[in-house]
Amino acid sequence: MNDAEALVRELFGLDADKPVSPFDRARSVDHIHPDIEFSLFGMSGTKEVGHGRDAYLAFTTGCRQALANHSDEILSVVGIDEQCVFVRARAYRKSAATGEALEYEWATLMRVEDGKTTYVTDILDRDAQAFWGRIAG
Image 1 (cartoon, one colour):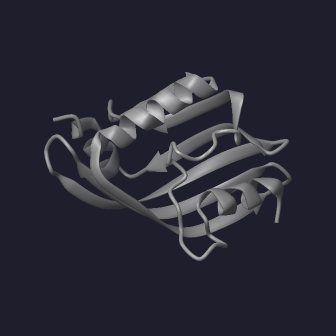
Image 2 (cartoon, one colour; image 1 turned 90 degrees about the horizontal axis):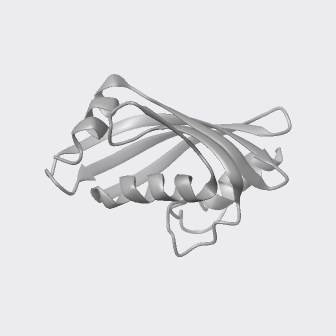
Image 3 (tube, rainbow, N blue to C red; image 1 turned 60 degrees about the vertical axis):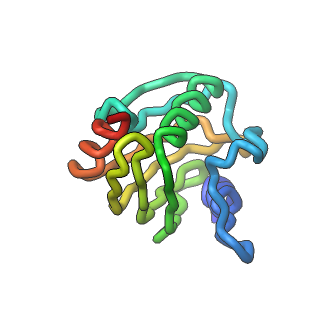
C-alpha cells in the first residue's frame, strides 16, 4: 500500500468501524497541501480548475452545501506507483434546491506527496455531470 492509498483509506474511514465523510469540515484539513491543484466537476456541470487549499475548500464546501443529502460507498482504492491512488465509488446525491436525486459512480485520481494531497481530478458520467449543472435549480 502506498502513502496515497493509506491516506484515502484513512479519510474515508475504510479500516474503521464506521465509514466517514472526507468532506466533514469538523475534521482536520492538514492532509490538503496549501498549493493543491484540482480539476473537478462542480455546479457548472463542467470541469472546474483551481489552485490552493482555500480555493479547494471553498469549491468542495459549495458543492456540499448545494446538497440536501449525500453519501458515498467506496468500491475500490488502488495505489498507483509511489504517490498516486485511483478511487472508484458509488454516490447518492440529492439537490437542496430542487429535490432531484441521482445515484451514480464516480472515480478520482489523487496524488499525495509527503502525506498531503497535491492534485485531484474526478471523472463522472454524462448524467452525473448534467445533474451537477442543474443542482442549484
